[in-house]
Length: 86
Image 1 (tube, rainbow, N blue to C red):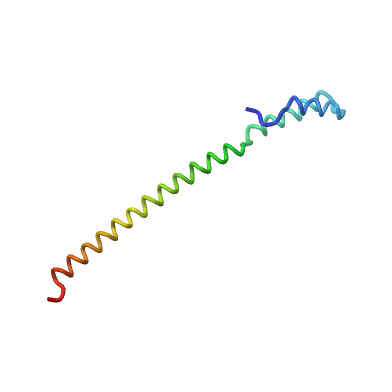
Image 2: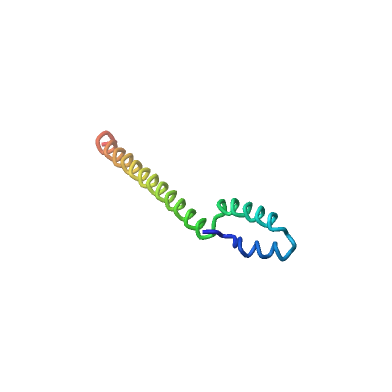
């Protein structure tokens, strides 16, 4: 979907005194650039998706660390119970 209204631009260029060839050349340049433009909605959706993926990675890491820490604490408690002071 074009973001720049090239028809309106062509009318403005013509009213400003540009020749039809100049107008066509400028409109062609704008159309090429229009393909590289993005909307705020697209950026927002992309950012939300990337943040969600990052959130999931962080959450998985935290859960993994908590499980590892729990394992170390349980192993330490068992070791103290078995070989600790009597």
